[in-house]
Length: 339
Ligand code: KG4
Ligand code: ZN
Image (spheres, rainbow, N blue to C red):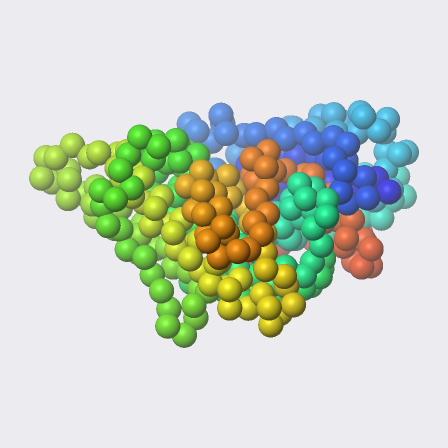
């Protein structure tokens, strides 16, 4: 079965064709980074317009290897969560395509899609498992009980991990897209130069909070400016990365150690979302997996950020579970992964 996936929830217009949920036949991503760089972040109105301009060409390109819509069985589209105007471009386009070709239309939750990137990278992987999801809008530890059944074990109480990378990058003048820029600058800095805060909750060991570390970076930069000291940006980037990535690693590790057995999830951790591209996080998680004896499923760098292959993969499993939409399908800026 061939699934066409369409993704437009933020700043990438993407389309992909996946066979049987696991095999990538095409994967086209058109990034808007150049446009938004001018403004230091994603401008929602501009994103919607850029999606509108790109979507037709991106979908045509993705369809080329299979010959066209006649060889597509199902159309899957991200309909939540994300920038509402951006989501609506993909949803409207997918609706038109599905109903003009008579193919089923499948709504896909964007964060469920990120988890499904693991199915593409690791063909033997099947739920149940525990997943750490760290993206620009979400930081979750979830129990993926089945392909379409999720339970949140921990979540951020304020900023998402990716959001904190983006904000820290802005404060020290690196600009957009912040996560990748902090990641590369951190390589030349000292991760132990500055002690940035890490937050733990007694009653919720798998919950996160990243607003404190962001504020600490702001204060550190201000203090340096007021004292006339030159900011060592590489040390800030490295120390910030250590604070955020060690908390993500510790709490995900604790969830696997504490809960994997009782949940019947297997001693393993699946990692998903844009922040899973981070080199510090990847090395901390690898070290923890070795030390604690769990299997680690990291997505390849090509599937960490937003793409439509992961949407088509999840779309396949949503289709199998009967989650089929009609022409009234809408887009939603927020929606829980559990719904
Ligand atoms: O999953 P994603 O592409 O989009 C959302 O669903 O939000 O995640 C984007 C987030 C951004 O906050 C970006 O700064 C962060 O992922 N990110 C990174 C890296 N690459 C992307 N954060 C840290 N290190 C990276 N290498
Ligand atoms: Zn995403």
